[in-house]
Amino acid sequence: MKFAVIVFPGSNCDVDMYHALTDIMGCPTEYVSHNQTSLEGFDAVLLPGGFSYGDYLRSGAMSALSNIIPAVVKAAEDGKAILGVCNGFQILTEIGLLPGVLIKNAGMKFVCAKSKLRIENNSTRFTNLYGVGEEVEISIAHNSGNYYVDEVTHAKLRSEKRIVFTYLDNPNGSVGNIAGVVNEKGNVLGMMPHPERSVEKLIGGVDGIRLFKSILAGPDYS
Image (cartoon, rainbow, N blue to C red; front, side, top):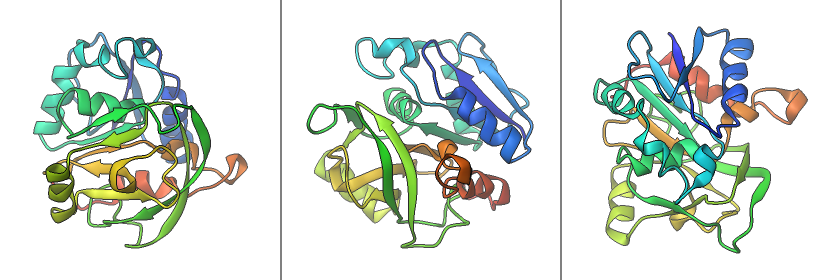
């Protein structure tokens, strides 16, 4: 399985993602510039965290206009695994692959900490190696991680079991403590916590590594 890590101007977690996939997972992985127009040959596409285009206008808004975006949308439509982390999650909402919007954290402060999460759905290609109700610890680092959807959309996400992760501590004020959601097909996941920063005991924990192993393990739930 071959992974693409999309690099936007201002990405700063692309190297972390690449390290997790190549050095920890041993997966073929390539950086792909935002200027490229094709993702042919890749089985999974990862949009990393950072401050793409300096979060100009709003987080992810400028990146949503990048050359690579039509290829990301096509990959999603083709059923390939798409993972957006932090700024990547913001981009996925901006381009309409996921519902909702990420707004400023409650308290209007940047948060950087370990965060406790609950696995709400393990029947996805991203969580099949976790247990339902399992509590894990994954790093967070964001300024606009407050996930907002209206009541109707929130109810729809709940009823369709598309809420994959919830916070136990809700560090940013997200609706329903939501930390990560999938699309209707289940092949696109957006999450604010950084699984790529939780793959080694040396840097504080390994609870994130099973997300990447889940993508490899399958089955394909799209």
